[in-house]
Image (cartoon, rainbow, N blue to C red):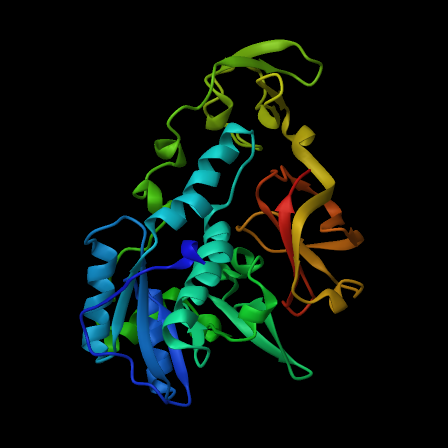
Length: 361
């Protein structure tokens, strides 16, 4: 239990006890989580904001979230999780690249911290009587009296892909108020209408713990240089360390070729990167491990779709096998560069997340 002890800092009023409908909103200080808090207030919830501090000391995220909560007249708490975040997210992130993987830190953070560690800490602080809410664009869909994670109405902003590793028992008590929003512009307009100071705050696009820089900024040693080969094993170039490359990468290879080449394999065993023309980067079958079964009853359904990266629409697929913590799916059409370390997420035809796992091949 010692790992999940933490101190909650609160510069506002305490969260009143005894309210029937309580919502603890994980707030980053941005427009989406601020909108979520405001929406839940309007729906009659007793709302409090909680900001995880992964940097230590005072920082802009905590200050911004605190200002929003003050404007909404709701309590705001911050909790220092710098050590746990490094152990659960940023440390494994750096280690994965050095193993030739392409990790997904946002999905890891949701699974291990935002919807893993923080609910544990919150229950120790406030008991069980609250919903956990965030500003993610995702929905909770009701089917037969059960709650399921589902895609947001605004598909271009949908973030259910990053939430597919969250446990079912957490999903059953989660709230995603932005799931029905028509667009990010609508969200900003809603926040602006109520005069909140974050309405025009820029959207975060890169990795939060890399200070919004390229991921390579947090990898201290990308590894030793080594060969870049074609699929026949012929050396056609040199790489600067496998941690600086991802599957499907085209730019930055430093290879002269009459046609575009893409990374199709990263082999840490012999420090080699393999490249090929674009056709060589496609696969139909994808296997994932550490599978989280959110709706296993739907895996035999017709019309399943899968995603192997956050961008783009899910593509039609079928489940070939699912057992012992692994799932293998076959896409109707080959998909480009499924990268070990990224997520495979399987959806029903109406957008319910059936399963999610970490791609292994």
